[in-house]
Length: 463
Image (cartoon, rainbow, N blue to C red; front, side):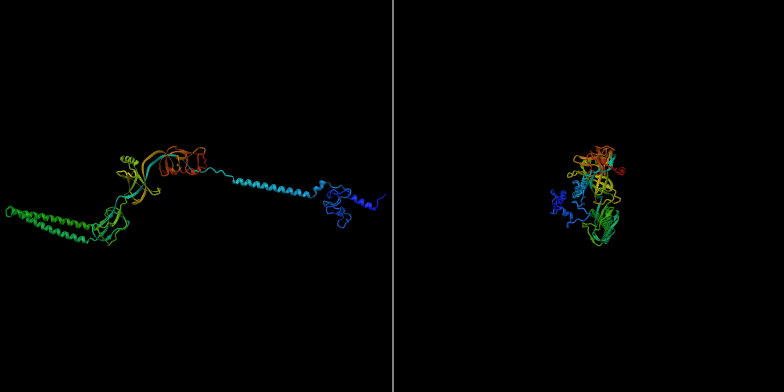
């Protein structure tokens, strides 16, 4: 029995839908939007253009009749999941690159923040040498002039003239001031006249005495009259001597009207101006003169050094004394010990010394404060080092000794005399050994040094 048209349509429809797409679900009866596959193939109008093929679910053309359908792997590679895989892979690559860059940046920061090992410090070194060094005693001293004179008047009168300038250097005998001499000249003339009168009376008395003597020899007058005449002659002789004394006094008073300099020295500020009346009882005086050449310095030293000083003076040795400024940097003058006091000050345990200086350049000034340096002895053939190289700690003085491997070691030493920038090492160091002279704050026991810069030898050779 042949099938009817109705059966063929139904069977054709079933045959056409017998191979459902994998994307249509297990039944393949309908799509997710409720439309049939045939309707989807024919479009909205249900009519498919002639010669065209229905579209595949992947958007591609429907395979022709007789072409086997694509496998599930091919559809997976050609579907949306393929792009998702590439996006995920690219994301992983970006994250990996970013992580690598972050790691590199962290490593760079760690390298920058890591502590750097400081290089060995550069220090100056100097080798110990052998030489002579003087032994000095240092003390505070005061410049004291040998003579200071306050010039006063010895007569009363008006000050007529001043023959000096303030601060002038004067010599002994130079005329300084003049006082009105006229009253004293009048007194001198009066005394001279009185002396002449009394001398005339004395001559007359002597003549009478001669006459009385002749008369008495001839028993012409009594002995009493002769004796009276002898007394009269003696009286006039005394009067004449008195007049002579008054005359000399008047002459001296006249000399006192001209005041001369008693010493050579420097005149201070003027105390009285011309025209004033000066008196012997004035306490201020007319001017002050201070001797500057030579001049002395008085200073104290401990009594422990007195035996050495006495021994040197007994041997006739001159003890040299240098005067330095307050900072002890500049030497002002050089002199020698003149003498020392005859007793020790029990309150301080010191003895006072006086040194004399020529002071030809007037560098020392009265009452000036100086640092006196007395040379007691000279140590010869001593081991010497720069004074800056000697350091001190709780154990005492030490130096940084440079070893052959360019490391330093703390070397304890015993210090002797010091002269300026040079120090004597009594024990602990030998001549020729190298020591450090600066940058001590960067050194410790066993520290390594580099780039030694030797100190100039000029300081050593200049001595």
